[in-house]
Image (cartoon, rainbow, N blue to C red; front, side):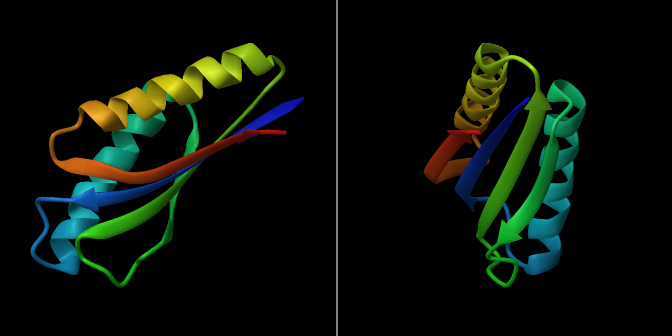
Length: 93
């Protein structure tokens, strides 16, 4: 069993309030969950309206597959014009 974890610290450009931030995050999280069948949660910076820390997890039997999926998710975030990635960290267990 392989567990892949991706931690992203992102800056959101669209939000002017916590309510707008949460709306944008819900759309983003839903899109990633549906596209990649992974677990996604906001794990930090809940009180900041332009920044968020996301945790993404995947459990699989193949380490190569896990690495590929996490790299595709990272590319998806990098292409999104509504945010910028401040930092990212990926681990496989």
